[in-house]
Image (cartoon, rainbow, N blue to C red; front, side, top):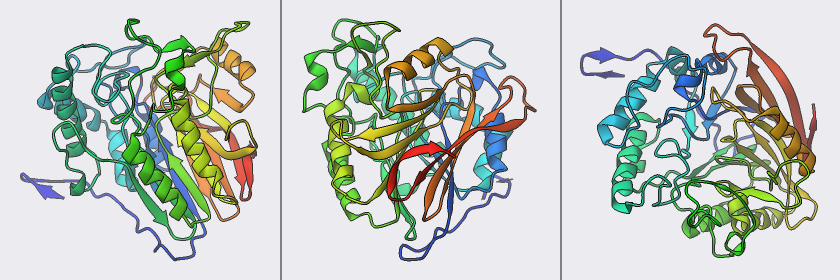
Length: 392
């Protein structure tokens, strides 16, 4: 690319197979949660060296806020609220050579989560301000900067504080990929009235309200229709976070505790999506996610019935994870969670063939070392026609 007297480095893209072509293999990299201050982007460097066809980034590409400990570098300004400030934050992140290498290595498809705008925001509401008009101006600035800096088409140009980014792609007869937006249209947090910015609560009637939505009515209808039309061997749904129901109560607690900022805050919406999957008998569904700073493998069920889909969640590129104790407790209290690991940073390589979908959890050795090495932590596989992941 040439512009302003400058010429960009050379990058590489790939041409997807035609919709009706026989495709024997697709390799995806799944990434999320790259807090600039908490570590070097070495995971992106190793991802750039993988033989990937596509990177799927499921959110928190930048962080608007400073948090965590053991910072190796610093944001160069306070939390952004204006368009120029968000542009500057993207410029800072994109100055990183490892992130540049990952973009140059292969094409990306991208969605956002909350930190591209404001932590834990829901639709038109921020937990940090009661001024809706101010927040929508901030959201418009953040969405515009995201559009300007991400590899998305001109058709996604924002209209003020609104932009449609959910989309789907087909890779021959092998994969139908759906990429979702679970931030812009969602209902506000349940059970949270008058309780500030907290998002962990015991149950309440509001959480179970069937009118509550994670995706919005229009996106739900689009996804339901798309799933009904999907004809490839595998259907992948890439979205921001952990979809499986997860009790987050402490060990020995008698009441279940839910994280209202995730799918557990929207169980009716999750059930509608799982029902749409279950209606496609014989289809192979895999859900991909991020956000929770853990590797996770889970079974997804419709109304406590048989397993209808498998879920693979990637850890963060840099953002610090949960404590070992909380991870052990979640595994003990949630039998549909087959694997959790929150102490490692890295990414996921998803390797798909007609007979299987394998997820390889790739971890870096030390997020504070820019020259750190990489190793494979674990691998899981789903066989076509047999939902449920097993160690590979």
